[in-house]
Image 1 (cartoon, rainbow, N blue to C red):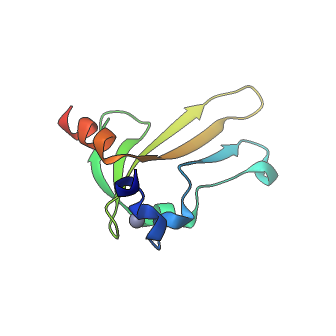
Image 2 (cartoon, rainbow, N blue to C red; image 1 turned 135 degrees about the vertical axis):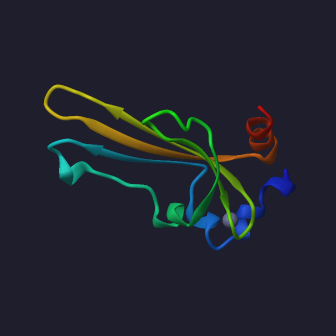
Amino acid sequence: MPENKRWEACETCKHLKDWSRGEQKGGRPEWDTSLPAEANQLVLVRDLKPDSARLHQLLRCARCGTYYLYWTEYEFLVGGSEDTQTLERLSDEAAEKLLAG
Ligand SMILES: [Zn+2]
């Protein structure tokens, strides 16, 4: 699928994995992880759940046009809450389906 690999040559996207996750657990700062800094360079295309407190967004790289799905989760646990942010690279087809639906 060479047409779906344009991100490999992109200065932003080549630093992003197909799937990245950041996690922050309450009370365990030494275990915290976060998304790569390049994730902040992606541009919001559509807020898929604007009414939700948890984010669910379609993002796009301004440089090469690759789409990403970004969502956040929050879980309350005894002994500390858990926040996660997930970023997943989408094919153009998958992104177009999301935009159409
Ligand atoms: Zn890119």
